[in-house]
Amino acid sequence: MIYIDPPLWPAHGTMFSHLVSDTSLAELHGFAAAAGIAARAFDLDHYDVPVRRYRDLVVGGAVEVDGGTLVRLLIRSGLRVKARERSASLVHPLLARWEALLPGARGIGAELLNRWGEPHRRYHDRRHLLAVLEAAELLSTGPPPRTVLLAAWFHDAVYRGTADDEESSAVLAGTLLGEAGSPDREIREVQRLVRLTAGHRPEPEDAAGALLCDADLSVLGRSPEAYRRYLADVRHEYAHLDDDSFAAGRRRVVAQLLALDPLFSSPAARDRWGEQARSNLLSEVVLPQRT
Image (tube, rainbow, N blue to C red):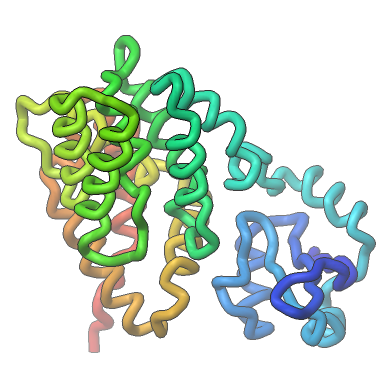
């Protein structure tokens, strides 16, 4: 069943409602598509819809409920996205991680978190930062190298969706780590690791590079449902592109990832995510129609 709460949430000069399903995201996406709601309006477990659409969505079959009831229905359905998966709720936990990693540099950590929280980000946000840090910890037999964790913090610190983002992030790492008094050798290694995330092709003997690249690509090995959420988030970041332009660009990205052999550099990452990652990527490949 599809539910909608009253348009009581202000944003962008109007009021918004939340549209949810208590059955599946597939049902929710299907209803939204049929109603002409743009994919970029999807926010992890609901669609944000402006007040002007409220009445026609109700006429189209959405059941009116109050906000509290909508949340309870979403929780009972199992579709509710937890707070740790919402970027805004991660500031304090991530800042604590940063202060443990680089004591005395709280201001730099706060600047980085502001960057990771920029409004145009939907996938490359604080959730992604935390996911990369946790994946690096998961793949390591002991504490991950400090340089790998620092590189994780900086690898998408500059994100404009352009080809020079990694280079700009590496330059930023040099500037801010220099201000923090980090040794030159450490700074150069962090910059090298950040630049590696542009192509995810570490050399066979590069254990640190493999760890960071595998952690960065761990999203590809998520469950099919989580992978669809990832794709929706990426599409939202490129909302300025029309569907054809985005699809062409995404095909190039998928082809480049499928061309990586292996996709994950370490045996641990291949065992954990390899099979599912390849399945997820292949699910994006549209086979030509036979005539």
